[in-house]
Image (cartoon, rainbow, N blue to C red; front, side):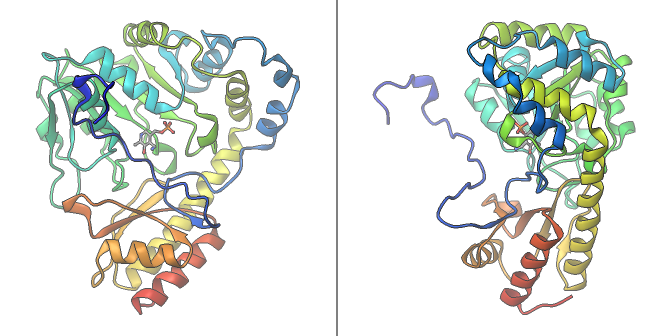
Length: 355
Ligand code: PMP
Protein backbone atom coordinates (compact mmCIF):
# COMPACT_ATOMS: atom_id res chain seq x y z
CA UNK A 1 0.00 0.00 0.00
CA UNK A 2 1.31 3.47 -0.85
CA UNK A 3 2.27 5.77 2.01
CA UNK A 4 0.96 8.74 0.09
CA UNK A 5 -2.21 7.71 -1.70
CA UNK A 6 -5.35 9.03 -0.04
CA UNK A 7 -7.15 6.46 2.09
CA UNK A 8 -10.27 6.94 0.00
CA UNK A 9 -8.55 5.04 -2.78
CA UNK A 10 -7.71 2.04 -0.61
CA UNK A 11 -9.03 -0.97 -2.46
CA UNK A 12 -9.62 0.90 -5.73
CA UNK A 13 -9.19 -1.59 -8.55
CA UNK A 14 -8.01 0.31 -11.59
CA UNK A 15 -9.08 -0.37 -15.17
CA UNK A 16 -6.79 -2.78 -16.99
CA UNK A 17 -6.45 -1.80 -20.66
CA UNK A 18 -5.97 -4.50 -23.28
CA UNK A 19 -2.33 -5.54 -23.67
CA UNK A 20 -0.12 -3.37 -25.88
CA UNK A 21 2.93 -5.68 -25.91
CA UNK A 22 6.22 -4.63 -27.47
CA UNK A 23 8.03 -8.00 -27.29
CA UNK A 24 7.05 -9.15 -30.77
CA UNK A 25 4.78 -8.24 -33.66
CA UNK A 26 1.33 -9.68 -33.01
CA UNK A 27 -1.77 -9.89 -35.11
CA UNK A 28 -3.45 -7.50 -32.73
CA UNK A 29 -7.15 -8.20 -32.34
CA UNK A 30 -7.56 -7.32 -28.66
CA UNK A 31 -8.47 -3.63 -28.27
CA UNK A 32 -11.07 -2.95 -30.96
CA UNK A 33 -8.90 -0.49 -32.84
CA UNK A 34 -9.53 0.00 -36.54
CA UNK A 35 -7.10 -2.02 -38.67
CA UNK A 36 -7.25 0.79 -41.25
CA UNK A 37 -5.17 3.98 -41.04
CA UNK A 38 -6.70 7.46 -40.75
CA UNK A 39 -7.89 8.97 -44.05
CA UNK A 40 -5.45 10.87 -46.34
CA UNK A 41 -6.70 14.33 -45.37
CA UNK A 42 -6.17 13.59 -41.68
CA UNK A 43 -2.56 12.63 -42.37
CA UNK A 44 -2.05 15.73 -44.51
CA UNK A 45 -3.54 18.20 -42.03
CA UNK A 46 -1.68 16.74 -39.06
CA UNK A 47 1.57 17.21 -40.97
CA UNK A 48 0.70 20.78 -41.92
CA UNK A 49 1.76 24.11 -40.42
CA UNK A 50 -0.32 23.35 -37.36
CA UNK A 51 2.68 21.45 -35.99
CA UNK A 52 4.60 24.72 -35.84
CA UNK A 53 1.95 26.16 -33.55
CA UNK A 54 2.52 23.64 -30.81
CA UNK A 55 4.07 26.42 -28.73
CA UNK A 56 0.55 27.86 -28.41
CA UNK A 57 -2.31 26.44 -26.37
CA UNK A 58 -5.16 24.90 -28.33
CA UNK A 59 -8.67 26.43 -28.33
CA UNK A 60 -10.21 25.30 -25.01
CA UNK A 61 -13.68 25.80 -26.51
CA UNK A 62 -12.89 23.50 -29.49
CA UNK A 63 -15.17 25.84 -31.43
CA UNK A 64 -14.26 24.87 -34.95
CA UNK A 65 -14.62 21.13 -34.36
CA UNK A 66 -17.79 21.59 -32.32
CA UNK A 67 -19.38 23.61 -35.14
CA UNK A 68 -18.46 20.95 -37.62
CA UNK A 69 -19.73 18.06 -35.52
CA UNK A 70 -22.96 19.98 -34.84
CA UNK A 71 -23.55 20.43 -38.56
CA UNK A 72 -22.64 16.81 -39.27
CA UNK A 73 -25.11 15.44 -36.71
CA UNK A 74 -27.84 18.07 -37.23
CA UNK A 75 -27.65 19.60 -33.75
CA UNK A 76 -26.45 22.93 -32.31
CA UNK A 77 -22.84 23.59 -31.25
CA UNK A 78 -24.17 24.06 -27.70
CA UNK A 79 -25.19 20.39 -27.76
CA UNK A 80 -21.65 19.19 -28.46
CA UNK A 81 -18.93 18.53 -25.91
CA UNK A 82 -15.43 17.43 -26.97
CA UNK A 83 -13.17 15.27 -24.87
CA UNK A 84 -9.84 13.52 -24.68
CA UNK A 85 -11.21 10.15 -25.73
CA UNK A 86 -14.72 9.20 -24.73
CA UNK A 87 -13.37 7.78 -21.46
CA UNK A 88 -12.98 11.38 -20.34
CA UNK A 89 -16.67 12.16 -20.90
CA UNK A 90 -17.63 9.03 -18.99
CA UNK A 91 -15.36 10.07 -16.14
CA UNK A 92 -16.73 13.64 -16.16
CA UNK A 93 -20.31 12.33 -16.19
CA UNK A 94 -19.82 10.05 -13.21
CA UNK A 95 -18.17 12.99 -11.41
CA UNK A 96 -20.78 15.53 -12.44
CA UNK A 97 -24.06 13.67 -12.15
CA UNK A 98 -23.62 10.98 -9.50
CA UNK A 99 -23.16 11.07 -5.75
CA UNK A 100 -24.41 9.43 -2.56
CA UNK A 101 -27.99 10.30 -3.45
CA UNK A 102 -27.85 10.06 -7.25
CA UNK A 103 -26.89 6.48 -7.97
CA UNK A 104 -26.00 4.92 -11.28
CA UNK A 105 -27.07 1.63 -12.83
CA UNK A 106 -25.40 -0.43 -15.56
CA UNK A 107 -25.20 -4.06 -16.74
CA UNK A 108 -22.97 -6.64 -15.06
CA UNK A 109 -21.33 -7.46 -18.38
CA UNK A 110 -20.38 -4.19 -20.05
CA UNK A 111 -17.51 -1.77 -20.46
CA UNK A 112 -15.29 -2.36 -17.41
CA UNK A 113 -14.61 1.31 -16.86
CA UNK A 114 -18.15 2.02 -15.58
CA UNK A 115 -17.43 0.09 -12.40
CA UNK A 116 -13.99 1.70 -12.06
CA UNK A 117 -15.41 5.24 -12.32
CA UNK A 118 -18.11 4.28 -9.82
CA UNK A 119 -15.42 3.13 -7.37
CA UNK A 120 -13.15 6.10 -8.09
CA UNK A 121 -15.92 8.53 -7.19
CA UNK A 122 -17.07 6.46 -4.21
CA UNK A 123 -20.48 5.69 -5.70
CA UNK A 124 -22.92 3.01 -4.83
CA UNK A 125 -23.48 1.41 -8.24
CA UNK A 126 -26.44 -0.79 -9.12
CA UNK A 127 -25.21 -3.62 -11.30
CA UNK A 128 -27.99 -5.31 -13.27
CA UNK A 129 -27.30 -8.76 -14.75
CA UNK A 130 -27.72 -9.27 -18.48
CA UNK A 131 -30.33 -11.91 -19.34
CA UNK A 132 -29.14 -15.47 -19.96
CA UNK A 133 -28.85 -14.74 -23.69
CA UNK A 134 -26.60 -11.75 -22.84
CA UNK A 135 -29.21 -9.20 -23.90
CA UNK A 136 -29.86 -6.15 -21.71
CA UNK A 137 -32.86 -6.50 -19.42
CA UNK A 138 -34.48 -3.22 -20.45
CA UNK A 139 -37.43 -3.49 -18.04
CA UNK A 140 -35.00 -3.47 -15.11
CA UNK A 141 -33.93 0.08 -16.05
CA UNK A 142 -37.43 1.48 -16.61
CA UNK A 143 -38.47 3.72 -13.74
CA UNK A 144 -35.34 2.78 -11.80
CA UNK A 145 -34.96 6.42 -10.71
CA UNK A 146 -31.19 6.28 -10.99
CA UNK A 147 -28.76 7.50 -13.61
CA UNK A 148 -28.14 4.81 -16.21
CA UNK A 149 -25.19 4.03 -18.46
CA UNK A 150 -25.53 1.54 -21.28
CA UNK A 151 -23.12 0.81 -24.11
CA UNK A 152 -25.15 0.41 -27.30
CA UNK A 153 -23.94 -1.81 -28.92
CA UNK A 154 -22.79 -3.34 -25.67
CA UNK A 155 -19.21 -4.41 -25.10
CA UNK A 156 -17.94 -7.09 -25.03
CA UNK A 157 -21.09 -8.79 -26.33
CA UNK A 158 -21.63 -6.59 -29.43
CA UNK A 159 -25.41 -6.80 -28.94
CA UNK A 160 -27.71 -3.79 -29.37
CA UNK A 161 -30.78 -2.40 -27.67
CA UNK A 162 -33.50 -0.93 -29.95
CA UNK A 163 -34.22 2.79 -30.01
CA UNK A 164 -37.73 2.02 -28.73
CA UNK A 165 -36.17 0.44 -25.66
CA UNK A 166 -33.80 3.39 -25.18
CA UNK A 167 -36.84 5.68 -25.32
CA UNK A 168 -38.64 3.57 -22.71
CA UNK A 169 -35.71 4.01 -20.34
CA UNK A 170 -35.49 7.75 -21.04
CA UNK A 171 -39.20 8.33 -20.63
CA UNK A 172 -39.43 6.45 -17.36
CA UNK A 173 -36.43 8.22 -15.77
CA UNK A 174 -37.08 11.89 -16.56
CA UNK A 175 -35.12 13.21 -13.57
CA UNK A 176 -32.04 11.09 -14.24
CA UNK A 177 -29.37 11.12 -16.89
CA UNK A 178 -29.36 8.21 -19.32
CA UNK A 179 -25.92 7.84 -20.87
CA UNK A 180 -25.85 5.89 -24.12
CA UNK A 181 -22.27 5.01 -24.98
CA UNK A 182 -22.20 4.62 -28.77
CA UNK A 183 -18.51 3.78 -29.16
CA UNK A 184 -19.38 1.00 -31.65
CA UNK A 185 -22.59 2.28 -33.24
CA UNK A 186 -21.10 2.88 -36.70
CA UNK A 187 -20.66 -0.85 -37.26
CA UNK A 188 -24.36 -1.67 -37.55
CA UNK A 189 -26.21 -0.09 -34.63
CA UNK A 190 -28.66 2.80 -34.74
CA UNK A 191 -27.64 6.06 -33.13
CA UNK A 192 -30.00 7.74 -30.70
CA UNK A 193 -28.53 11.20 -31.35
CA UNK A 194 -31.84 12.43 -32.90
CA UNK A 195 -33.56 11.68 -29.58
CA UNK A 196 -31.73 14.52 -27.82
CA UNK A 197 -34.35 16.85 -29.30
CA UNK A 198 -37.04 14.95 -27.44
CA UNK A 199 -35.28 14.03 -24.19
CA UNK A 200 -33.22 16.53 -22.20
CA UNK A 201 -31.92 13.72 -19.95
CA UNK A 202 -30.12 11.86 -22.77
CA UNK A 203 -26.33 11.98 -23.06
CA UNK A 204 -24.94 10.27 -26.16
CA UNK A 205 -21.22 9.49 -25.95
CA UNK A 206 -19.19 8.91 -29.11
CA UNK A 207 -15.55 8.28 -29.99
CA UNK A 208 -13.15 8.68 -32.89
CA UNK A 209 -11.21 5.65 -31.59
CA UNK A 210 -13.07 2.92 -33.48
CA UNK A 211 -14.87 3.79 -36.73
CA UNK A 212 -12.73 6.88 -37.32
CA UNK A 213 -9.37 5.11 -36.94
CA UNK A 214 -8.02 7.53 -34.36
CA UNK A 215 -7.56 5.63 -31.10
CA UNK A 216 -4.08 7.12 -30.82
CA UNK A 217 -5.30 10.71 -31.18
CA UNK A 218 -7.65 10.48 -28.15
CA UNK A 219 -10.81 12.17 -29.32
CA UNK A 220 -14.34 11.70 -28.08
CA UNK A 221 -17.47 13.83 -28.03
CA UNK A 222 -20.97 13.86 -26.68
CA UNK A 223 -24.29 15.11 -27.93
CA UNK A 224 -26.86 16.16 -25.34
CA UNK A 225 -29.12 18.97 -24.19
CA UNK A 226 -27.54 22.38 -23.62
CA UNK A 227 -27.99 21.91 -19.87
CA UNK A 228 -26.06 18.62 -19.72
CA UNK A 229 -23.39 19.98 -22.07
CA UNK A 230 -22.93 23.05 -19.87
CA UNK A 231 -22.58 20.78 -16.82
CA UNK A 232 -19.82 18.80 -18.56
CA UNK A 233 -18.07 22.05 -19.44
CA UNK A 234 -18.17 23.08 -15.79
CA UNK A 235 -16.25 19.93 -14.89
CA UNK A 236 -13.83 20.27 -17.80
CA UNK A 237 -13.02 23.90 -16.97
CA UNK A 238 -12.46 22.83 -13.38
CA UNK A 239 -10.02 20.09 -14.30
CA UNK A 240 -8.26 20.50 -17.65
CA UNK A 241 -9.52 23.24 -20.00
CA UNK A 242 -7.03 22.44 -22.76
CA UNK A 243 -8.01 18.80 -22.89
CA UNK A 244 -7.63 18.38 -26.66
CA UNK A 245 -4.33 19.07 -28.36
CA UNK A 246 -4.06 21.07 -31.57
CA UNK A 247 -3.23 18.16 -33.84
CA UNK A 248 -6.12 16.07 -32.61
CA UNK A 249 -8.52 18.98 -33.13
CA UNK A 250 -7.58 19.42 -36.78
CA UNK A 251 -7.50 15.67 -37.34
CA UNK A 252 -11.05 15.47 -35.99
CA UNK A 253 -12.26 18.06 -38.47
CA UNK A 254 -10.44 16.51 -41.40
CA UNK A 255 -12.01 13.11 -40.68
CA UNK A 256 -15.49 14.63 -41.04
CA UNK A 257 -14.50 16.01 -44.45
CA UNK A 258 -13.73 12.48 -45.60
CA UNK A 259 -16.56 10.62 -43.97
CA UNK A 260 -17.04 8.39 -47.04
CA UNK A 261 -13.60 6.88 -46.33
CA UNK A 262 -14.73 5.83 -42.85
CA UNK A 263 -18.08 4.55 -44.12
CA UNK A 264 -16.20 2.35 -46.60
CA UNK A 265 -13.88 1.11 -43.85
CA UNK A 266 -16.85 0.30 -41.57
CA UNK A 267 -18.52 -1.60 -44.42
CA UNK A 268 -15.34 -3.61 -44.99
CA UNK A 269 -15.22 -4.41 -41.27
CA UNK A 270 -18.86 -5.51 -41.29
CA UNK A 271 -18.18 -7.82 -44.26
CA UNK A 272 -15.14 -9.32 -42.56
CA UNK A 273 -17.16 -9.73 -39.35
CA UNK A 274 -19.82 -11.72 -41.22
CA UNK A 275 -17.19 -13.95 -42.82
CA UNK A 276 -15.46 -14.61 -39.50
CA UNK A 277 -18.71 -15.24 -37.64
CA UNK A 278 -19.93 -17.70 -40.28
CA UNK A 279 -16.63 -19.58 -40.30
CA UNK A 280 -16.69 -19.97 -36.52
CA UNK A 281 -20.39 -20.89 -36.38
CA UNK A 282 -19.78 -23.55 -39.04
CA UNK A 283 -16.96 -24.91 -36.90
CA UNK A 284 -19.34 -25.28 -33.94
CA UNK A 285 -18.46 -22.13 -31.96
CA UNK A 286 -21.07 -19.98 -30.22
CA UNK A 287 -20.92 -16.48 -31.71
CA UNK A 288 -23.14 -13.72 -30.32
CA UNK A 289 -24.85 -11.49 -32.92
CA UNK A 290 -22.61 -8.43 -33.18
CA UNK A 291 -23.27 -4.86 -34.32
CA UNK A 292 -19.74 -3.86 -33.35
CA UNK A 293 -16.18 -4.16 -34.71
CA UNK A 294 -15.62 -7.29 -32.63
CA UNK A 295 -17.31 -10.60 -31.99
CA UNK A 296 -17.75 -12.48 -28.75
CA UNK A 297 -17.22 -16.22 -29.16
CA UNK A 298 -17.04 -19.44 -27.20
CA UNK A 299 -15.43 -22.68 -28.23
CA UNK A 300 -17.60 -25.69 -27.22
CA UNK A 301 -14.73 -27.76 -25.86
CA UNK A 302 -11.90 -25.45 -24.84
CA UNK A 303 -11.92 -22.91 -22.03
CA UNK A 304 -11.43 -19.25 -22.92
CA UNK A 305 -8.12 -18.79 -21.14
CA UNK A 306 -6.46 -21.78 -22.81
CA UNK A 307 -7.55 -20.68 -26.26
CA UNK A 308 -6.41 -17.10 -25.54
CA UNK A 309 -2.98 -18.31 -24.38
CA UNK A 310 -2.54 -20.72 -27.29
CA UNK A 311 -3.39 -17.94 -29.75
CA UNK A 312 -0.95 -15.60 -28.03
CA UNK A 313 1.81 -18.21 -28.31
CA UNK A 314 1.15 -18.26 -32.04
CA UNK A 315 1.31 -14.47 -32.34
CA UNK A 316 -2.41 -13.61 -32.29
CA UNK A 317 -3.74 -11.39 -29.52
CA UNK A 318 -7.42 -11.43 -28.57
CA UNK A 319 -9.15 -10.32 -25.35
CA UNK A 320 -10.04 -12.68 -22.54
CA UNK A 321 -11.91 -11.58 -19.41
CA UNK A 322 -11.63 -13.55 -16.19
CA UNK A 323 -15.14 -12.54 -15.07
CA UNK A 324 -17.02 -15.71 -14.09
CA UNK A 325 -19.98 -15.41 -16.48
CA UNK A 326 -17.85 -14.82 -19.56
CA UNK A 327 -14.60 -16.61 -18.78
CA UNK A 328 -15.11 -19.10 -21.59
CA UNK A 329 -15.63 -16.39 -24.17
CA UNK A 330 -13.09 -14.45 -26.21
CA UNK A 331 -13.61 -11.00 -27.69
CA UNK A 332 -12.03 -10.82 -31.12
CA UNK A 333 -11.62 -7.43 -32.81
CA UNK A 334 -12.29 -7.43 -36.54
CA UNK A 335 -9.03 -6.85 -38.38
CA UNK A 336 -8.20 -6.87 -42.07
CA UNK A 337 -9.14 -9.94 -44.09
CA UNK A 338 -5.49 -11.04 -43.99
CA UNK A 339 -5.38 -10.80 -40.18
CA UNK A 340 -8.63 -12.75 -39.87
CA UNK A 341 -7.28 -15.47 -42.19
CA UNK A 342 -4.32 -15.90 -39.84
CA UNK A 343 -6.60 -15.95 -36.80
CA UNK A 344 -8.84 -18.63 -38.33
CA UNK A 345 -5.87 -20.76 -39.34
CA UNK A 346 -4.49 -20.65 -35.78
CA UNK A 347 -7.87 -21.25 -34.12
CA UNK A 348 -8.47 -24.31 -36.28
CA UNK A 349 -4.93 -25.56 -35.65
CA UNK A 350 -5.38 -25.23 -31.86
CA UNK A 351 -8.90 -26.63 -31.57
CA UNK A 352 -8.77 -29.22 -34.34
CA UNK A 353 -12.05 -27.80 -35.62
CA UNK A 354 -12.77 -26.58 -39.12
CA UNK A 355 -15.40 -24.56 -40.96
N1 PMP B 1 -16.86 2.98 -24.39
C1 PMP B 1 -16.70 1.70 -24.73
C2 PMP B 1 -17.88 0.79 -24.71
C3 PMP B 1 -15.42 1.23 -25.11
O1 PMP B 1 -15.25 -0.07 -25.40
C4 PMP B 1 -14.35 2.13 -25.13
C5 PMP B 1 -12.98 1.66 -25.59
N2 PMP B 1 -12.22 1.00 -24.69
C6 PMP B 1 -14.57 3.44 -24.74
C7 PMP B 1 -15.84 3.85 -24.39
C8 PMP B 1 -13.46 4.45 -24.63
O2 PMP B 1 -12.89 4.76 -25.83
P1 PMP B 1 -11.98 6.04 -26.04
O3 PMP B 1 -11.63 6.61 -24.68
O4 PMP B 1 -10.82 5.53 -26.79
O5 PMP B 1 -12.83 7.00 -26.82
